Image (cartoon, rainbow, N blue to C red; front, side):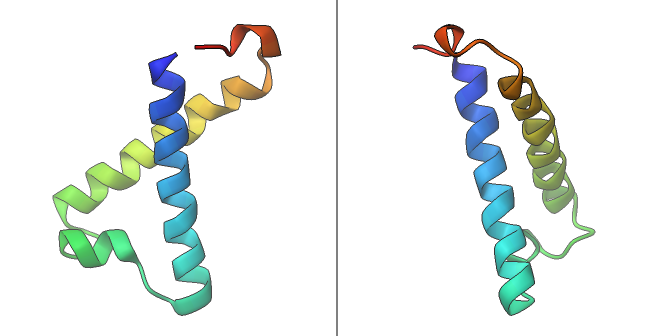
Length: 68
């Protein structure tokens, strides 16, 4: 399902960003989009959060259903 792939991609983006914050204290999303409070940054953070919530559903699905 395409929604699963988009959600997984967003979650990976978020994980990479958190890794950069944890290791280097560098927020790539904020750097690219003009700070943590900038509208575009907040949109990206919100999409990553929604993608992470969607990925929770992947934990409870039957493996046979997750085929494209």
